[in-house]
Image (cartoon, rainbow over all chains, first blue to last red; front, side, top):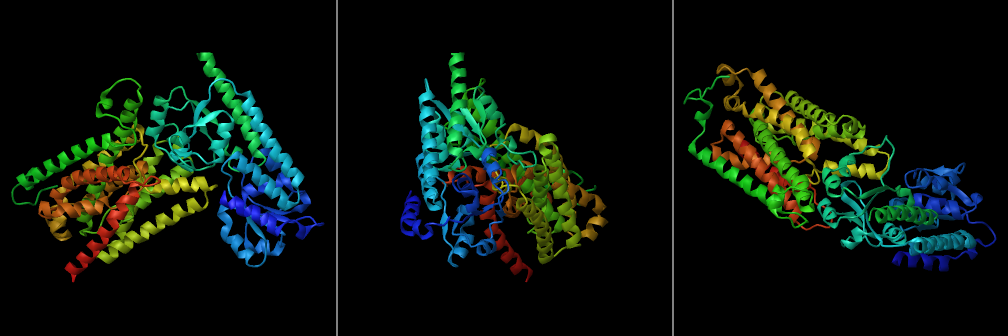
Amino acid sequence: MFRLAILSVLILTWGVPAWAGAKVRVMSIDNCANQLILVLADRDQIVSLAKGGDVSTLPAIKALAEGLPRNDRTAEEIIRARPDLLFYGTWTGSTAMTVKRLGIRAIRLEPPRDVAQAQRQIIEVATLLGQEERGRALAARVARGQDEAVARQSGTRLQGLVYRSGGYAYGADTLVDSIMDSAGIDNVAARLGQKLAGTIDMETVLMAAPQVLLDDQLRDRADPRIATDFLAHPALRRGLPDVARIQFPMAFWLCGGAATPIAIDALSALADAHRATLEGKQ
Amino acid sequence: MRSFLPPGPSGLAAFTARDGRLLLLLGLLVVLLSLLSMVIGPADVPLSALFSSGDAPATIIMQELRLPRVLLAICVGGTLGLSGAALQGLLRNPLAEPGLVGASSAAALGAVLVLYFGLYTAFPLALPVAAILGALLAVALVYLLAGKDPGILTLILAGTAVSSLAGSVISLAINLSPNPHSASEIVFWLMGSLKDRSLDHFTLSLPFMAVGTVLLLSSGRALDALALGEDTARTLGFSLGRVRFFLVAGTGLAVGAGVAVTGAIGFIGLVVPHLLRPFVGHQPRRLLPASLLGGMALLLAADIGVRLIPTQLELKLGVLTALVGAPFFLALVLKTRKVMS
């Protein structure tokens, strides 16, 4: 929240007028920034996007990057390209610090902690890019998606949990928690007191008895899968025999932005279908 | 193999009533810690749930989560303690242990390669087999590198070389992993843990650990003879090649199978024999069963510790044993240096 406030102050103080008239040339060395730029900026504004991010990007958004230059997130590439604006994230701070010292304007994108924050971030990034209209439209689409999901919900809310290998789960104050809430699923991890992301013991999960287990780690076969058998543990199979296991690729909610309204819509549909199955059984 | 010991050919002759009391005490400690381990956990579950039928959450927690955890702690801890005592006898060096001679790292490398290339999913037995091969190669390599009657420095350097080699290939696997989640999975697995293991893991590793344990325990008299020097052991009729094979194979089987399902857990093999040696008159054969039980007790205690020490994220078992074992190792190096000088 504090960092978003700083971002807002930066927008006001650095402001768009410095580039008034000319398009802001933007470069990204962060996968989530890639996604925002792809949907908010004009193609001729984009100097280059960070390579990779296939797991964290929905195919529809990835398709927009076709033909655009990609970078290896190095300071050398940034200095050579001299963009008006550089977006970086959690893992590329040191590169950004290096180029900041050389006078390149770099803005850090924090992972949003809820849907409302994701909406604010969309508008702030759009403003920086000189694309306020597009930003407002995307933020409105997120809000509309939330409203529609809430309107569709009927009956009781589901008790669900995103559970990953090693017991990793998303708790309160995460975009995942907020998207689940919008889709009519109460986050069991948050109920158990988990804040942000962390681990929850399998014993605790068994006692909490969620109705839905969301697996967002769908991967390709070439991936090393050390803890593959974690979610196939006999304790989960035996202790939660009726739990619905829903595959929900992490690309839906790893970053806020264009994926957010799609995630709310998709999860809401999955939750509705499961709710209907449960009600049918009763 | 013939006994060279004065009391007679019986293997039991070397054991005293004092040893019996020590083993009984350690056995009781293992039982006590096992019971304690069964009732400690995030969920408040009574021990009686272990014997219940049905699929109540408490029953499942006891039967599918805590029971495998305790059984694996007993088997892995026991084999690590026993392997440490056997390696110290074979190399005639109190600083030898599976971790320090590179067996654990090489076993971890074997396991990581199987997991990395997805062989485990298609062929579960590949996991213990690869880890065992890694451990066997490491012990054999250290034995060859260190030469006959190795000094402390040579042994540590040989072990460090093998560990570094295994570590560098593991680092390569982490380096080339396709995404940060996969890399963190490998890193966390390497830290060693008994959490969330199943009875499948136990049954997968048990046969190998059992064979390894039998091989190591049956080498007691040969180790006693080796303590007097290789020439003396040969004079007493022991085939040194066979003895070495038994000990290297036993260590490889026991440590490899353990590491395959728990990740690397270090220093148990160093600490346990050292603590128990004064109670068995510094005799390798008497040290073996005591180290087996001592290893079980220490790993059970450490596994209870990781659940009781309050930390934001889960404290890994291998991290805790290393935090306790490394200073112990340093103290042992200093002590050994003083004795040598």
